[in-house]
Length: 228
Image (cartoon, rainbow, N blue to C red; front, top):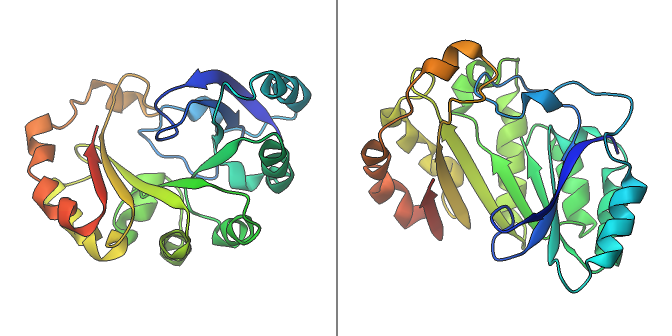
């Protein structure tokens, strides 16, 4: 895999686990509010070699619980299954962060029992996906990934980042039929500082109190609802 960077320890990116994060290069979305847009381009070389990461992970057995593979979009890389298998062999739990645009890959990873946790970004209502992602997206790909994750036996989270002007909070209850029965759903307030679209960096996020008004909508339909 081609990695754009890594973080040796995190306490917040893998629920209930101490983990390392690996950031895969390349993404097929161009979300204007993305804060990891430095990973959009698919480069030919990693900023850190897998061999270096692997040797580090061997020294962290018994100290780390898991490894997160984020991005970018990891499912674009053909050797993702091999990397996940090697991480499992070291005794670590695996978490995948994905945009859900490649349900065929996701289905293979789930079928091979290579994942212990999946976090999928649910960018918008299906009809508004292209606007949210900056590229044409087939809504059926997204809905198929949601279905695969919900029907799996592993822990999972769907998360929606809300951006004033791109999202209307009054529309978000329309997500209920899509995510109902999920393990976790998180509303993330837009952070303008590093947004890919420079114009968005001057945009104020929603007031926290406005997001809190959605708590009664989502709390009854998922096991764990979070606002952050």
